[in-house]
Structures are given as C-alpha cells and as structure tokens.
Length: 511
Image (cartoon, one colour):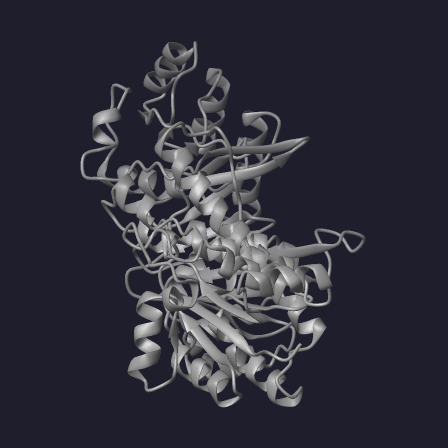
C-alpha cells in the first residue's frame, strides 16, 4: 500500500506547497489540475498535468477535467483483485493512492451580499466530490485528504510507515471525507431550496463541538454541536454544563438588547433582574440585584462592559455559576478566580443575530423566524398611545427598558420597570394575573416600591383585571401588544385610573 501516485486538486492552497514537497521527497509522483498544478510547478516541485496523464484535455471552462476512467479507475480498482488489476493494465489505468481535494468555496460565495444564482451555481463542485467519494469508497487502498490540517499527520504517517499510511488513518480520513461531501451537498440543497421554494426541506450540519458531562439531568447524555466556542472563551472554572450553555445563550441574547452599561442576572434562562447606569457598571449591578436578592443564587450574571475589581467584589458576595463579560480586568480575574468552580466566560466580539429558531417536537422540528422585533426608535412609543393620557418622558424610558426585558421572560410574562431597572418580574404562569401578582410580591420582598412604575406584558391583557392589579400595585403606565376582544374595556379602565397605555402591536410569547 505504499503511496506511489497522488492527485492534488484544491481550491484552498493553504499548506499545499509544503504537502506537495513532502510527498515528492518520499518519491510520490504528483498529478494535478489547473491552478493547483501551476502553484506546485511554480514552487519547483515536479508535477504532471492531469490532462497529460489522461490524454483528455480540460474542457467546458474546466467543468470537465477529472470525470474520466483513468482518474476514477485509478482510485476505485481493488489492488488485490486480479480481474481489476488486469482491466486497469489493459486500459493504461495507473493506481492513484492518495487524492487531496478541497471543494469549490460554495458556502463562502453564497454568503456574499448580492451573489446571483448563476454565480452560486458555478461554485458547485462536481469533480471534487466525485473523486472524494471514489477514493473514500476504496479507502482500504487510497488515502483521501480534504482538510489542510491533516497534511502533517499524513506525511508523518508515511515517514513512519515506509511510504504507507495505516488502515486506521485511512478509515478515519474516509469518514471525514464523507462528512465533508454530505455537508457540502446540504449547503447546496439549502441554498437552492431557499432560492426556489423555501420550506421544501430543512438541512442542518453542525460539527461536534464537545461531549458534555450530561444533559439537563445526570441520567441524560448530551453533546454540543456547532460553533458556540467561536463566540465565547472560558477563562476559568469547571466544564460547562448543558444548562450553563442554555443560560449563557439566553443571557447573551438579553444583554444584546442594551447599549448603555448594563448588567443582567438570569436563572433557568429567565431574567431575575436587569439594571443600567450611565456611569457605573457596579451601580447597574446593584439595580439588577435589588430586583431579587434570593433567586440569583447559583445564577448567571452578564455585563456588556468589562468587569473591573469593584464590580467583581460586589458580584463575589453571592454564589454564581457563570459570569459573562467582554473582558475582565486583571484584578477582577484574580479576585473571581479564587472561586475554583466559578466559570468566567469572555464574549468574543459581536454575537450574530439569530435568524431562525428551531425546536424539537415529536417526529420532527418546528422552525420559525427568531423574535428580533423591537419597539425602539424616536417617537415609536408615542405613536402607539391608546389612552387619554400620554406617557411622560420617564414613563416612555421605562417602557423602552421594560419592553426589552419582557421579551426574554417566559410566558405569561410581566415586568414592572423603571427607566433604568427592573422592579418586579413574574414569569411562566398559567394566568397573566398570577404573573403580575408574583412580580408585585417579588418587588415587595425586595423592598422596592412600584409607585410610578411601568407594567410591561408580553401579550395582551385579556381582561381589565390584569391592568387593575397593576394600577393598584402603583403602576402609572402600561405597555402591551393589544389585540384582545376586550381592548376597549382595558383602555376604558386605563383612562378611569389615569394610566398611560401603549399598544405595540408586537407580541413576545416565549413558550
């Protein structure tokens, strides 16, 4: 199984020259195509054009160059089968023992703004996947390379094996090769599906990022797939759990709503408290923590500014599972790292907006657009006032603040807010009135007055009773989607009690 002949045809030239030179130094004859052959020859490495070997020129703008018996026969024939060997000899087919291919950059092309369908189609590789599949099918004899990261270990294996690679290595590379072509085909089908009739099929492809200790509970196995760690760096602490990752995601989505210095505390993906402060992140923390001083135990804390020593001291007074921030000062890290199990997570740049929300159901998946609707913007709230009394400037600011939070609270969701802080949060109740009662009770437990607050509801008040309860608790303004058959009654109740009310026309259910 000594590698005598290799075919190299790559769009990504990373590491190509070193790999080609390493093969040539071990006596391997190099066959190559187009730009790959030119790059190898320019480096002074002997290489034979594929058209010279096959006796068939590249044609149709390079669309046809390797779809030939001398290529696929050289990859597919069984070396230990006398009939295969005889047929190969009869037709002048030489064994190709290594094929190195990476595919046309289809995904990179369609990711570009304004790309046309014709441009995308030209980046659909045909010969590359065909050679990968041929070589992988015959991996008993053929080494298939689809990733430059594998070049060094292949050369090392050949040096150690007298020019051979091991059966185990060839098998692992074949698995990687089939996974590559499968992902490539999924990317193409997804793009073409969206270009023609969206929704005909859904294809997903996420590489394994890591196996977790367990899932939501210890008896459940769990894995993490995708690029989560492209956006977060763990600086300290225990291994992340399944629940940690869910909480980190929820916390990051919430904090991305805020531009001012803000701190949020979450538990089981629900906000416990959120606070903003123009000057001090520590003050923002105090406002968030004041909302609920018991629920944050074992929770998640996230800040949208670097954590300094003063904030670290304040945070370290309670037990937290995870703290997330764009950066931690050296003093803050030194202080927080005294807690060996506390996970410190650094946000790496801007988190991409989520465009689709996917959930598993019996027998399949539910897919929807992500809830990225916002009520921000100068004059937006003023244009949606339905009460006799318009909200004051402070009430508008409180509405804008609370509306950002309530969309991240599980339904039924009620948030009482001031212009820079949450005052009471009620989540996940079967009745909206019950959520309001919980929010009022939480505020009372925290010693916070709701007088002059704004009540924010993720969905409409189906009856006036929810608004009455909020007004009796001290709320002077309300923001909700509207849309109930009893909206007129609710508006009349607001007017009777002097409550300023806004109908956003946007609902934020979170099941």
